[in-house]
Length: 284
Image 1 (cartoon, rainbow, N blue to C red):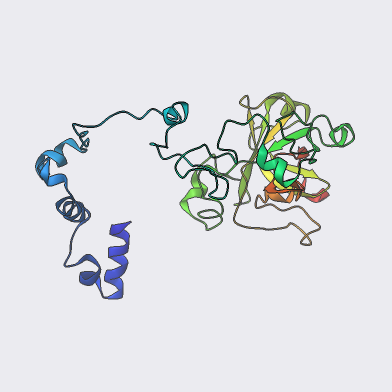
Image 2: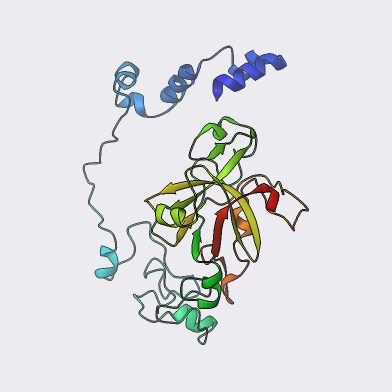
């Protein structure tokens, strides 16, 4: 990155100012080394050859096992969170819970809404409001979609910019029409039932929307599950916006806008059922 910005600075006419007289990347490393405490312990030549330095422990160092302070009823000696100031009896003591103790029943939830069925005071299993057990929806959309953060782009940063990231086979797939399609992964058994093969264009859809993707047939997913990263950086509907399938990979068109519970603002993108079929452009 430094080399790139130095080149740009040169084109803009202030290369010497930006590089402080033409310093290279290694020159900057040496400058930071000299300004640190490292020269007290190791020479630049030895550090450059070895590539790292392990900071020695002080002679009076004592180990601080995690949460030992809590077991011994002492103040925290590790960087753990404590209770909110309004809840703690003594500064520096107690766990992060409202009571400062290990809780089986959540005192904070009891304070906010003790009757919230979606967030009970004691952890309990709750069926998803959109999943394999929601029979009516599941008959229509039998695939559970999971959509974690993308692996190669950072949210929307780096995607949809005609960048080299598009050349990564597991990020987008280049098809014969010259278009880079977002990837959706599907179990081989589910793919076979639908006549879907590797890199086929497919339509992933439910009542909320539809997205055109390139299929990646895999054994890494269990049957009944589909996987596609969220947060592509573009939207390109094949027809009227909002009424037609998107072919850029906006998977969040399929996910619900519902929150985890009425009292929690966390989103629930994995509570999402879809269907996948081979895409025939003339039909959509």
